[in-house]
Amino acid sequence: MSASPDRHFDVVIVGAGAIGAAMAALLLRRNVCAPGRVALIADRFAAAPPPDADWDLRVFALSRASERLLKACAVWDALPRQRVHAFESMCVWDASGEPQGQGSLRFDCAEIGEPNLGYIVDGASLQWQCLQAARGAGAVLLEAELAGIAGADTHVSVALRDGRELSGQLLIAADGPKSKTRDLLGIETAGHAYHQDALVAQVRTAKPHGNTAWQRFLGSGPLAFLPLPDGRSSIVWSAALPEAARLRGLAPAAFSAALTQASGGVLGDCELTSAPASFPLQLQYALEYVRPRAVLLGDAAHVVHPLAGQGLNLGLLDCAALAEILGQAGNAGFFGEHRLLRRYERWRRSENLLAAGALDGLERLFSTPDPLTRGLRSAGLRAVGKAPFIKRRLAQRALGIIGDVPRFLQVDTQGS
Picture 1 (tube, rainbow, N blue to C red):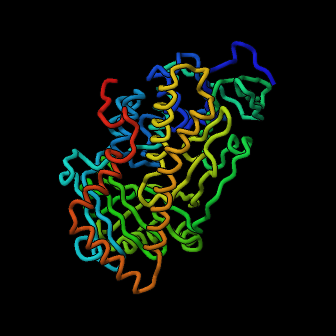
Picture 2 (picture 1 turned 30 degrees about the vertical axis):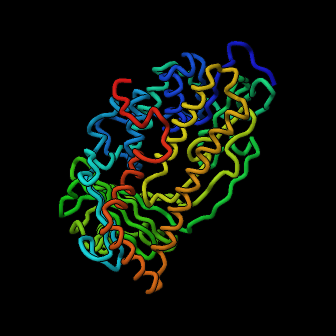
Picture 3 (picture 1 turned 180 degrees about the horizontal axis):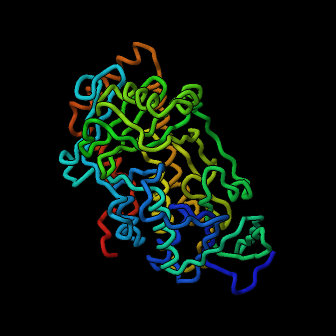
């Protein structure tokens, strides 16, 4: 497999979701690659959301580290302000407790000296602006289906379904949990299905959300209310497959009543303002992140339970770590060196496995109906609530302002 000279790139990225597009923009904005030297391949590129569209059913809770990365990509300031909403506090409680009493835990941005605990961002707007940032920085967008991959000592060759061929110093797989690139590279995955679906929808509530993210742990899975700027909330309701199927079949009024009951009435009566959608939940992790001249990012490398909203944040940290390591290489010819890519793998695989294990453990802990376990859960939440240092560290870790964070995300990159 060979590629003509005008089809040779420093980096070829497969997948043009938020992760792949942000990776392209980051490499170019940080001058790791020159304009025209990064290719972004996707079966289909996202279209611009209509200006009058409602919020996308996909919303993301973005950390401070993700905010800084998106500033470095020239994405953050391009996001429509009406599609970004800061939240200032978070309340987590067990179904056997009360949101303001025993068995609950509350985080507030003032306790950690931050202006907020993160942002709720519209998914369609984020994907579009990441794509625009990649295009504006000089990425070459190629709409085509991946057909094959062939590695060599000095480059990797990529065949597209339409007959085009190209090559690069490095291939990046950012094509999601069912990554075709990962399969072609022969990288296996492990994990398990949760036998749950996550139902997502927008709802109006009788009580104001108070710029607070609310999460109740039910026996069948967590229920989260994420605040939107117009007073509504976006829900993520994880339920066992039979229950999720039953809920999807309910009329809007019956679904709203079930949601009010499941939330314990924390925000009063709920009213659906969009038809609910759902997606299956799983834990999945790649057994390896790298091959010679190839590397995995985001959901192609790891898929976690959404109970803490960390999936996209982990993927963006992958982008930042890889960009930092490639930037230190200094020469595109070294991008695919296995030694260099292994540094990325050791860094991010350990961090991602730690996060995946913690989220999996929380899901198991809070979905156990055993009365003794339920008592231990409540006691644990009370203990953390009475330990300001532990609460502070948990909130800082979730924001991405402590831990093994890439150096350029440890300070605000506004204007970079």
